[in-house]
Length: 446
Image (cartoon, rainbow, N blue to C red; front, side, top):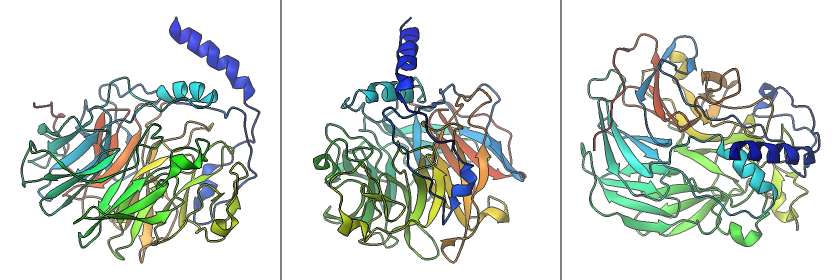
């Protein structure tokens, strides 16, 4: 009965959303110079949420020709990000963020509808270790490496130090090769912005090629500062953190929600994917991937895609907008990219060995839906050089229900592509179609 009441309440509120423009083909926005339609503002934005239903026995995502996919591990509790260790073990951050406070009446409806897109199980709030010792693509060992964490997301190993970005701090743990559990207490390297709202709770993390610095992505506390500028202090930015002292500085700013931080292997340049702002129409604003310049400002909240002004933000900052950098590559609007990994190794066909994989978590405010897939962008000389290609799809069924939603991506020690699927509770492994495929997913060991 409560579900019926909620549905009726939602139906009563949806007419408040003015009819918006018809969406364009999202593929036209993929690339370095996306078309930007006229913006459209709403009292209540249209919401088209795919209910999370999970995978039935035997179901898998669909992959491009020449590839195959299988479950490395199932039954996980909101797997969000991945880290491959030097010995081939795979770490999975099982996590979820806090419920934000309600500051606007429409957030009641938006929050309830968005909640349908998440699995019903509580997130694990832990780091799980997977081991595929025989290389068949299925983890026969699964243990809890670290538990009772605070919404962990980013992970990186530097020497014998394992760093985990909780939602409120970067923690350091001693790591021993081959260990399946860490019992030593962590040491706080530096605090990260969290607080009462903590709108974008995921904190991506990577290390500089020489290991002296860490880089953390800190998303905004709002869509476009509706919670006040005071709530945005040191947010919508990438932090550079000194690994020895924990001191930090803002490496780049104006990035609404930067994730997937990683260094491009040829040029050693930092790249990330960014979730841009909402409520301006089905095709504004394009989410993107971009190289990150030291000291660069990327527009949020005052402008988007360079110097296009957002009229909702007052007062404006024309001196900042004049400096706003244009991103390198549009992924199209509202795909919600949360993970990125550059191709390495030989576990995939030649066509997928020089570029970036991006996990697109999927839209909640666009019809037709956009994202819900993993794409590959070819690179040449350290830059995107071609159209994004669909690599893994099928996360949404014919009834617009989400079997799964891709988040973090990584390349394993054999060159296979790993995908953390939070709604499906699965880590998927994609390889060339000649790879072995003859085992069943592991069960958890405690």
